[in-house]
Image (tube, rainbow, N blue to C red; front, side):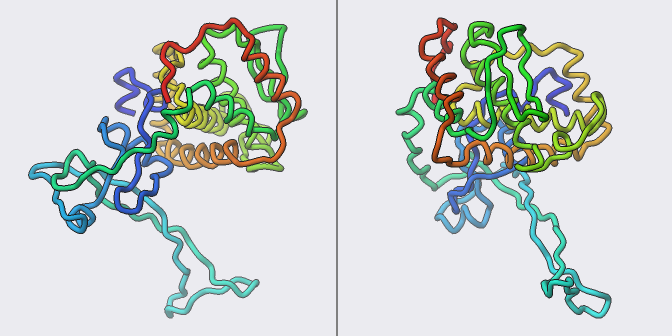
Length: 298
């Protein structure tokens, strides 16, 4: 919220996907943004204990950053007996925990592992195309009538203008990623209330679904390496709108991050076949005379 008030939109900035140094596992949900907001060069984070176990230590005076996670605990009655469901399984409840971590830059005596060169070897546009090719779970068609991009739940169809109508190819991909995020919420997929149910424009549920789609689009564009080339045009009213929404419900960003990452994983899921509509869309991109990326980064 503080960054929005300063005119910066955290989900519109490229970031290096943060991961734990010891486990080599990426962080999820809101942790991606809280760690990215620290603006560190290294993607690796670790606890004070992990730094010691790796033979190093945290530099004096460095401050930690919290990461949050959930543990599922078995519910107990007042006598300490585990409560069992009708199916014979223990009832569980989520319990939030947190750890304090430091970026590798804040430590000494620990060597950073080599970063994978896989994404460097594949140009950003090719990576974005591969993401789209894998998203073969709803129909996509060009909307030649106007500049509107939309997902229609009734027909399970995404309508997208021609790439020539966008400032550059990165904007086209980001827009279609946004609509793909909406499509993951259908009742036969992730069944999100913002898509599977009828909601009123301007309501909190509507705003939450839009935030989920914005975050998911940023996750996907960042995955492809095109997020830094998307030409966002943020007005003061846009920034003020999100500040107001998050002030009214501070939990929205946490819930939206979790839902957006789930949607992102769905879009990135492996599928055997690519529909003809997706193939035609990709073929059209190869021949379109749209402005190219300012910098093709991975």
